[in-house]
Image 1 (cartoon, rainbow, N blue to C red):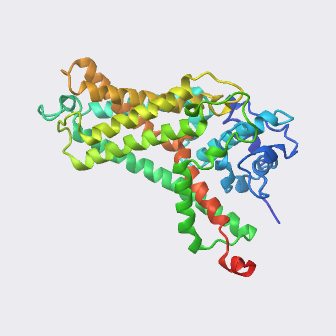
Image 2 (tube, one colour):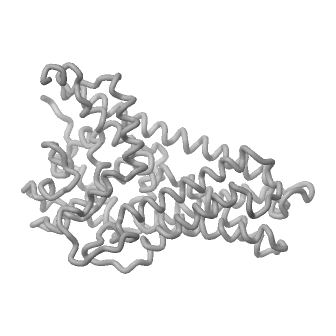
Length: 387
């Protein structure tokens, strides 16, 4: 069988981890990472097989592998690797490489390869959104005082356009991922039945929301000291994700159910939902960013600027949003207007950088879970024969 080999694949992936200093060439395929990984299933060879793909330059197979997105960085493999190759960090760098390969603008590669590139992309977005928001002023005081500084209708138009552009970018990347998966499974002779696809999608959504696989991480060996429940990695991750989804839902319903800029009481349901979601999200982010680290908590052991950037950006967005919800009931000052503008710009930055940073796993991971479930869906004919 003829394969396309890229000898420089490992070097390209290494640029996305540890500031370009990632090196897993010392891996000699002992299989220890697969043996200790609590998420390895059957004889898939996860994560050893993915590392081997990179070592020999099998880019096509690596891009089509949904195994990349199954790693939750529990650190079992890194702690027990006899060569110190750190497979968990490699998996993170490989995912970043796949995201960059799915972005046709080149911004994802620039943002993920260095702190300077990340800050440069962030600064370009921030400056563009600020100038765009300030380019139009409100014709007359109406609605909330904040919207006399930046028109509410103008904010929502920019937001809708931004969501459309980001949605198209994500769709193109996800579509390319599905095509690679389909082509590779066909080449391998793996049967894919469309009748099994809906059940695979449902199982992936349930698994992502319930953090079923995430709860298995780090359970291969008991920690040296009991871990507080609220510091368990899946609880922290669920807090961030659940709070973020609650804020997104509150913003969407607020836009759909009431006129733009109209005043509402503090007890307004959407405002309460957004506030509660913000506090829950901040709880998880505070542990991610500020909690003391230990060898048994490698989930939050940040190694690159890209790892730190998203939690900090999200925390700043939530904090400015919660402050704005309070200031809206107080007399408006120049400082409060600047804070409101800052929150809007940060929120737009967050959306714009979704397909360009490691934040993209929020859409790529559920897709990978669905493709994995689809590939391993039992054949009814085989099940009937075994029965």
